[in-house]
Image 1 (spheres, rainbow, N blue to C red):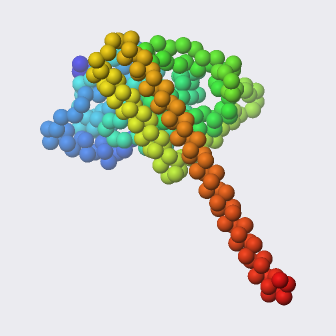
Image 2: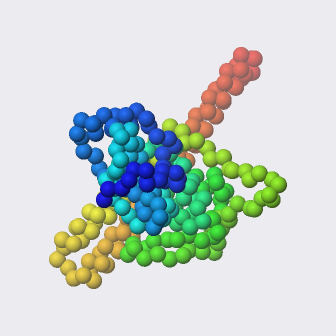
Image 3: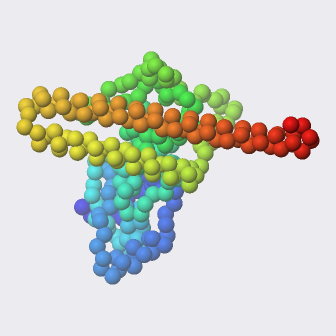
Length: 288
């Protein structure tokens, strides 16, 4: 559907990047003039306005070329729907989002009254970060507490339920930030910048999550090929999943034991060096 370019709004907070990359706009505009075809941009129509959700660089490239109308994929929805769509659309297509941009998108969802009630896993998948990183960002924003003490958790079959984390063992409810009197400016918690080491840990964590997904798919395929009844296949699948969980716990325990061993070995080596140094001092002082 073609829409008047002036009717498409870009001021609703649907741009999930920190800024537009002008060199990319210029490059797209040049390629368009040469006849290259680009994917159609996505907009959301709320009955009154068209909100640009995905394709900011393509939109401004066409605008720079003097286009009066733009071909669009039109979705019915509000500006919030456009923002939600934009975050997921930009995590893995076109120009890659930076880690800081993904972190900013995660903060936006965590601070939101509705989106903030999603599980860290769901938020992480939507923005393209791991559950571990979302948890770290949330702790920086809200401390060790869960927002409102409630999380929306999605089951494997796709259904959702509300989890009261205030009653969950070992967890505390994450409350919203206390209200500040009008005379006092609201302070925004400072979230630490993600370092290169954080980026590496993020990549390693995502690799582990992908390996888990691959193993699950392999198990499903393997079980499906066995000559067994459906009930037997379900039992086998559950047994395999339980064994994998136990194996992962054993791997964690082994890693902890290795760390402890290395720590004690290093400590022992340090003490031996100190003993030798003291023996040398005593010998030098004539004390055997």
